[in-house]
Amino acid sequence: MELPSFCLRLFLLIICLAFLLFFLVGKGREGGWVPNSDRSHNKTTILLWHWPFGPRYNLEGDRSLYPSADLVVFHHRELMTSQERLPLHLHRPRHQKWVWLSLESPDNSRYLEPFNNTFNWTMSYRRDADITIPYGKLLPKDYDTDIIPKNKSILACWVVSHYEPQHRRSLVYKSLQRSIPVEVYGRLRGSVLASSDLLPTISSCYFYLSFENSISKDYITEKLWRNAYQAGAVPVVLGPPPDDYIAVAPPNSFIHIEDFPSTKELGNYLRQLQLDKERYAGYFAWRHSYQVKVYTDWRERLCSICPKYQSLSLHLTRAHRVWSKVVH
Ligand SMILES: *[C@@H]1O[C@H](CO)[C@@H](O)[C@H](O)[C@H]1NC(C)=O
Ligand SMILES: *[C@@H]1O[C@H](CO)[C@@H](O)[C@H](O)[C@H]1NC(C)=O
Ligand SMILES: *[C@@H]1O[C@H](CO)[C@@H](O)[C@H](O)[C@H]1NC(C)=O
Ligand SMILES: *[C@@H]1O[C@H](CO)[C@@H](O)[C@H](O)[C@H]1NC(C)=O
Image 1 (tube, helix red, strand yellow):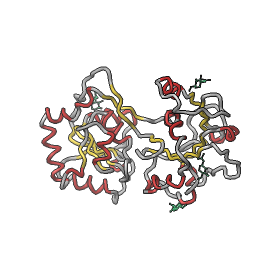
Image 2 (cartoon, helix red, strand yellow):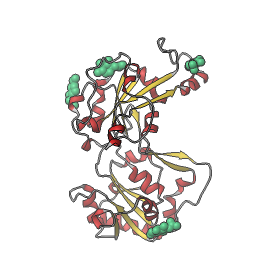
Image 3 (cartoon, helix red, strand yellow):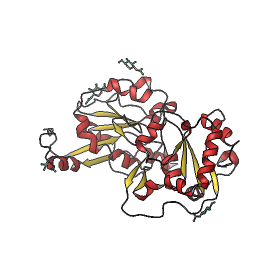
Image 4 (spheres, protein in one colour):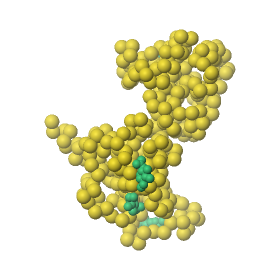
C-alpha cells in the first residue's frame, strides 16, 4: 500500500510564534526573558520525530529540520515497540531539548530503562510533568443552557471496550451489579455502540461508571471528560484517589468509589440520589458556569509547549529527575 509508507514519512513541524511571550513582556515583565542572540526571530521550532500511533495529520516540515529544532518530541509507544529509534547517531545541538511524550499510564509504558538520562522534559497527562497535557479540562462558559439531559431512564451504565476479569474495575462492577442494575455496552455484552450513539446513550443514564483501566496518579481520561461530563451523566469514578479528581474536576460533580465502605452502600446512595431531584441536580451545578474541553488533536497538544517554553528553558538540565515522574 502506498498510503501508509507515504504517511510514515510525514513529520510535523510546528512553529509557534512566541506571541505569548511578547504579551507577557508587554505586561511589564521586562527582563524576565533574555532573547537568545543567535535567534533573533521569536519562534520556537518543535519537531515531532514520529507520529503518535501512526500518521494522521498533514503538516509541513520533515526531519531535515533536526539541526535547527529547539525541541524534538518523541512519542514513547513507537520507541517502546522499536518501530522508531532515537537519532543518537546525529549531533545533538546544545540548546535542543528532547521531550518524552506519552498519554499512557505507567502500566502501559514498558521499556523505559534504556531512555534514562536521555530526555530533558516530560510531556504527559500528569500534573507534575514539565508540560501537562490533560485529556480534558474546564473552560468558563458565557451562556447558560439546560444543564441536565431530560432523557434519563437508566440508573447506571458502563461502556467497556477492553474487559479483563482481573481488572479492579471489573471486580467493582461485578460487585456493584449485585445491588443495582448496571447497563453494560461494549464487546462484553455484544452491544458495541457506534461512536455517534455513545454520548446520547450515556446521556440517558443517571450515572456513568467512569472506570479507568489503570489506577495511577493523575490518570483521568476521556472516560470522565467526554463520556460522563460531555454526555451529561454523573460519573462514578474509579481511578486515582479522590484528591487527584478534586484537583482537576468541578466540585461536587463526581462520586468516587473510595468514599464508600462497600459497593452495597454505593448502590444505595445512587438509588437515593436518583430519586432526590434537587440533590441530583446539585451534581450538575457546575455546568451553569463551565463547559468541558476534550483534547483529541496531537497538534493542539504540541502547541501547549509554546506558552511554557521560555520559563521551562530557564531551568537547568534535569534529565535525571525526568524519570521519577514517569516511572512511579
Ligand atoms: C520579539 O519579541 C520582542 C519582545 O519579546 C519584541 O520586542 C520583538 O519585536 C519581537 N520580534 C519579532 C520579529 O516579532
Ligand atoms: C536512572 O539513572 C540514575 C543515575 O543516573 C539512577 O539513579 C536511576 O535509578 C535510574 N533510573 C532508572 C529508572 O533506571
Ligand atoms: C434518549 O436516549 C436514547 C437511548 O436510550 C437515545 O437513543 C436518544 O437519542 C436520546 N434522545 C436524546 C434527545 O438525547
Ligand atoms: C538534555 O539532557 C541531556 C541528557 O541528560 C543533556 O546531556 C543535555 O545537556 C540536556 N540539554 C539541555 C539543553 O538541557
